[in-house]
Amino acid sequence: MEMTKMNVGALRKALDRREISAVELATYYLDRIAQLDPQLKAFITVPRAEVLQMAAAADRRIATQEDVTALTGIPVAIKDNICTEGIRTTCASRLLADFYPIYDATVVAKLKQAGAVLLGKTNLDEFAMGSTTKESFYGLTRNPWDRQRVAGGSSGGSAVAVAAGMAPLALGSDTGGSIRQPAAFCGVWGLKPTYGRVSRYGLVPYAPSFDQIGPMARSGWDLFLLFRGIAGYDPLDPTSLPASVEAEGDLSGSIRGLRVGLPREFFGAGLDGRIKERVLAVAKVLAEAGCELMELSLPSMAYALPAYYLLAYAEASSSMARYDGVRYGIREGAEQGIVGMMTATRQSLGLEVKRRILLGTYFLSADCYEECYQQAQKVRTWMKQDFAAAYSRCDLLLTPTTAAPAFRIEGEAEDEPVLALTEQYTVAANLTGNPALSFPCGWINHLPVGAQLMGPAGTDELLLRVAAVYTENAPGEAVPERTARDVGEQIEV
Ligand code: GLN
Image (cartoon, rainbow, N blue to C red):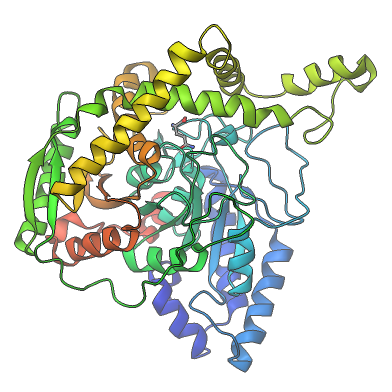
């Protein structure tokens, strides 16, 4: 059985018909990780014994057919900034090298309850601060389609795990594009849910007013199953939305009559012309399926990136205060007194993280508060209004996810403008709190390209439905033809 080619629905059937056991499935993925991951470095921790125990428990559930859910026995990889009880959670930082949480994040508890098998903890930029997965203390993650290129980030490990068939499903986190950008670079699906639909309890905070956990998968349907497994109100998260996830069933319903907006600011200078072509091809397929296309403008986008970074760094400086060697973090320099110890402990943070703490502290200082922080908050409010006005004219927005395909690991400097533009495309959804989905829409020189759909709060399922209709009707060459198996063949082991 070619398990990397099977979607979650097919795996479910095979498990329920006892054609495979959950232990066999987990073993298959563990072996595949052992084979491919030394080169790709998508995982930081793979607790083999615990994985097999969880799989055995799933098999017992399946044997009695009691309490079997869509995810029972299905392996899911977890980004390593999501707390897992008793399993090391490093945030890709040296500082948390021996942090074993004493509780599960709500999303993890939900997956365990559903009988899913937690496969391991995936690589990221330290504390999710970055866009490449190069800023990991545990080594950089490589793009499976070209190992000289970045996987994207910060959920690069989760994207690569799914793309290379080392996991059928993965969780990422998205503060300013960290699920969608690596999903686009690696040719998989990734959803940044509406803020508050997925509990943040147990997600190590970077910028809590933006952070959101979301699913990554190889198809829209798989993504939907994982989303359904993790979404819902959680009293442990004060920002959790009361509405429960009602959507059930099919993603393939008609999308006739939907108005899809193409915002000018996402198709201007700096965008790779070939990506533009691919995204316009998506628009064409949607139009053929009965959608009405319209051009529009979102003037607030000009300020999106500076507002995002200002607010995200400010929040990060406060989120990071807890790593003092007393409550969390490896304790260093204990012999030097309290200040010496805190200083020594915080020295073990990476440069990028330190830079953000310093800048964020400055943005919140009396010197800068009004001019920087408050201005950025005003931009955020304006963006919410600007997008709400757009959504009074159209139902959804279609844009590229990134301005270029995955760039080379070496040579970041020349990619900086492209990276900035890419971040601009993704941060809008975090600033407004609205959902955004990245899905594969073609290839450029053997590298995958992603399109992004955004909508007003609560339209997460609608975005998935529209993208699923595109995928069903897309011309053959647009959908990822190459499979995870090809990745395995391409990598000499
Ligand atoms: N690249 C963005 C940043 O560094 C996004 C990170 C994220 O979404 N976690 O802040």
